[in-house]
Image 1 (cartoon, rainbow over the protein chains, first blue to last red):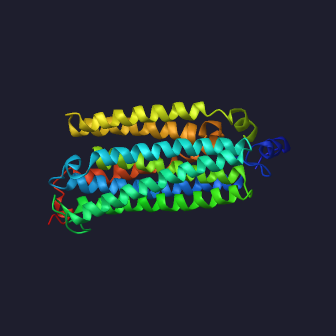
Image 2: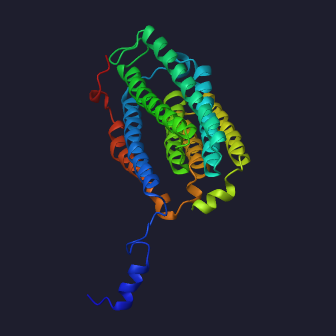
Image 3: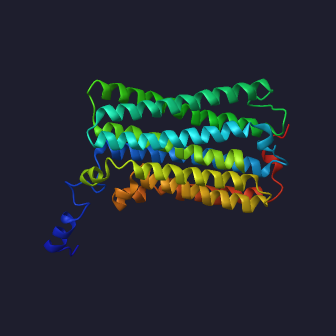
Length: 206
Length: 104
C-alpha cells in the first residue's frame, strides 16, 4: 500500500475515479446498450445452436428451394430501409424538428408492419406445407424447429420495436418529446436490423 | 457527445449513402449465397459480409463512431463470447455426432 497522495489524485482524476460517466452517455442510452449486448448474447446462442444442429445433421434441406427467396430478400430490403429512415428520425429529433421526426418515425413503423406482414405470410405458408416444431416434409426436425425459434424470436423483437416506436411517435406528436428517447428507441430498432442481417446470411443463404 | 451529434444532425445524406452501401452488401451476400462454392468457404465469406454490414450499421446508424472507446468495447462482448461458445461446442460436430440429435 504505497499509493501516495499523487497516485490517489491521479486515480480520482481518471474516468473511473467517481462522479463522472466513464461511458460518456446518458444513463438511459447506456442501459439500452447493456440491454442490446445481453439480447445479442441470446441471439448468438440461438444461431450457434442452429449451426451446431445443422453440422451434426446428416443432411439439411436447401433453403432456397423451401423458402420464397424473393420475399425474404424483400424483407431484408424493407428492414434495412426502415433502419435508414430511423437514423433520419433520430437526426431530426436531435435537430429539434419534431414534425419531421414524427414523419420519419411513421415511415419506420410502416416498414416494421410490412416486415411483420411478410413474416405472417411466410409462417402461414410454411405451416400449411406441413412444418411443425417436431416434423417437416423436407428433412430433419431441427430444420423447421430452428426456423420457428429463430425467426419467431426475431419477429417478436420486431413487434416490440413497432410498439416502442409507436409510443415514441405518439408522444413526439403530442409534444412530449425527447431526443434521447427517440435515439434509444432507434438503437433498439437498429439492433433488430442487425439480428436480421445474421439470420438472413446464416439461416437463409448459407 | 451531444454537441457532436448536432453538427451532423440534419445531414441526411450520410444515412442515404449508408443505406445504398448496405443494399450493395446485401446484394453481395445474396451472390455469395447462390454461388457454387464449397460450404465452408461460403460460410467464411458470409461471416465477412455480415460483420462488415453490422460494423456499418453500428458505426453510422447507431452512432458508435461518436461514442467513447469504453462503450465501444462493451459492444464487442457478445462477439467474443459467441466465438468462445462456438469454439467449445463445434469440436463435438467433427466426429460422428448424429447420436446427439433425433433424426426422425
